[in-house]
Each structure stands twice: as structure tokens, then as C-alpha cells.
Length: 476
Image 1 (cartoon, one colour):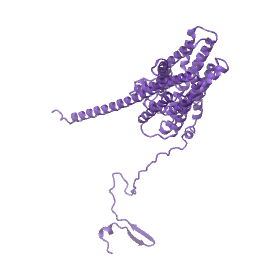
Image 2: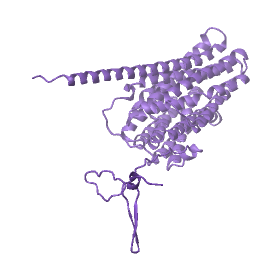
Image 3: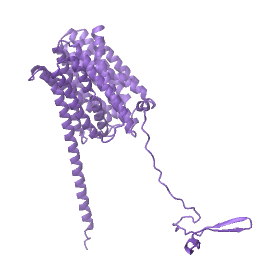
Image 4: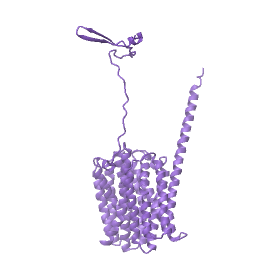
């Protein structure tokens, strides 16, 4: 078959000279660029596609396989366990020699002092480092606990009880410091950070579930001061273990002129949501205790509230094993919706069945919405808090939560004593508080979206105005 001249020009020429085979390639060459070697072979570039790392089948094993994480996690849990003991221990200790009215007033004063002092302590932790601030702050809190024991034991003037218990407010937010360490270690791994936040929330639930039980056991079995004494010593030991692990500690920021995280856009609305969520927890505890007391079975309240905390703990661990997708803000709305729906279960159960035995599984299911909601909320706090102020941001969130717990406890108690309808009407307060949290989150999200839209519109308008200005001819 004849070959066209065009095809012949593009085929290599093969010839033999003596004992060598010579091949001459007459195919067209691409033009050489300036400064390019003419004998440089032409290479084609191929884009290498990097595949994302496959999700670990054991996220918690990966988490605690990192150096130092097991030690600071153990110290953090040990330091947090007394946080669920202090209030109950102080109430039982003071009431043993005085009355419950004075005990409640002293504890309320301590919570108010914590709301004022805790953000300042967290700001110092961010500036100067966790170990440098947490250890002396915990030592001051331990001295306050010992002073309270001495004042109660030797019948000191009443004002000394308020002063000594207020000194315990210097105890640092160990849960916030632990979350800050995870955020520092896993800043490039959002999936692992989600697992870490879930573990921390489960640890919180475990401590607040076991703390009151341990405090009541020590104060009633040994002596009234045993709970406060043990709690102070355990807290100091846990903080020392936590602070000794320096390799995982975030670097201090030093003195900074940065504004408080509360002035960050979107943060005040988030604090309002935390306030409403705290009202859910505070009111649910009070109305459950009153419901059990009205049925002549007060000890059952501790058991079924423990089931609620257990449900939250299990749900938190399971939530941490999942690989969540999508926006955290949207996920937060879903969690709040589920919390509102599940909080209606105890209300419906108490109103229709009127049995403590039936209320227990309802509280177990209601508790399963707590940990996922709190985990997602803390993730949003971490993202909205400016860099170098993470401890302060999370402590402000916890402070808002404590304020909501106090308000919810008061509102739930009022509904039980003076509210309209049957004694089960108090279970409507947690539902109302959860619905309020959902509405506040929806309002905050819509406000942020409208702010972004207006800022984009203004930037486009300024850009258009600038282009029109530059198109104007220069004056002659």
C-alpha cells in the first residue's frame, strides 16, 4: 500500500552503518523556549491525585495512640471528678451543723463567684500557659476548701463560710484546658478533633454522674467533712498529673491586645443558646427530684437522673465514633431539634403513666440527646473563638451553661410549687427551654447569613464604584 509523503515525513529513518543501527526521527519538534536546552527531552507532566486518608476504624485507638494523650486525659478526668462533688459535699457538710437554707446560700454564692472568676482564670491560662496558672489556682481552691471545713467544724461566723467557699472559684476549667490541648494537637484533623470532643463530653457526663454519688457516700458513711476534703485532694492530684504533661500543652500567647471572645461576631448569640441549654439541665434535675419526692421515693431520683447521665455518656462515645459530615451549624440545629423532641418524653410519660419505673427509660432516651448537642456546641465554640483565646472562649461557654442551670433550677422549682396544673407540669420547663435554645440558634444563624450577604453586597458595590472611578479619563 503506498505511503503518503506526509506519513513518510513523520516516520523514523532506520539505516545500518557497519555494525551500528542508526535511527533518525524526522517528526516535527515543538518550538524551544528561551533559555531551554535544545537537547533536553520533552517530558509530559501528570497531575498526581492525592487520596484523602481512609477513616480509621478505631478512632479512639488512634486518638490515644498519640504521645502524651493518655496521661493528660487521665489527669483531666481525675481533676474533673470533684467538680460534681463540691456542691453536694458542701450542702451536706453545712446542713449537718446548720440548716439547708444556709447551705444553699453558700453554694449559690460560690457559683456566682465562679461565674466572675473563671473567665479571668482562663484568660491567664491562655496568656501564661496551663501549668503555670492551673497549679497555683488549684492550690488556692484547695486552701478555700480546707478553710471551709475548719470554719464549719469550729462554728466560725457565718460570713467566713461565704468567703472560704468563694475562694474555691479559682479552680481552673480542666475540661476546657483538655479540649484546648486536643484542638492544638489535632488542628489539621477535624475528624479526630470531633472524636476528642465527644470523649471529653462523655468524661464530663461520667464525672457529674459519679461525683454526687461519691460525695453523698463519703459524707454519710465517714464524716460530714469527708466529701469536701476528698474532693479537694483529688482535684489537686489530677491537676498536677495534667500539668506535668508539658509536651501536649498549647503554647502561651503572652500579653495581647485582642478583644474578649464575647465580642467576636456570632459568639454572644451562641452564649444565649448555652444559657437556654443550661436551663434544660437545671430544670430537669429539680422537677425529677420533686416528682420522686411526691411519690414518697426520694432516693429513686438519684438513680433515674444517673440513667439520664449514663444515656448521655454512651451517646457521646457513640457520636465520637461516627464520621460526621456537613456544616457544624446545621448539625447543631438537628441536635437541638432532637433534644426538644426527646425532652418531651419525660413530660408525656409522667403525665400519662405517673410511674417512676416508666420515667426511668424516658430520661435515659432524653439524655441521649445531651452529649451530641454539647459536642457540636463546643465544636462551634472552638471555631468561633479567636486563636490564642480558646480557654477563655470555652470557659465563657461553660459559665453561660452554669448560669442557665441556676435559672432553670429556680424556674423548675417555682413551677413545682406554684405552677398551674398537676405536679407533672414542671416537666414542661425543660421542653420550653430546649425549644428556646433551638429558636435562638435559628435566629443566630439567619442573622449571620444576612450579615454575610450584606457584607458581600457592599463589597461588590464598592468594587463596582472603584472600577467606575478608574475608568474615568484623567483631566487634561
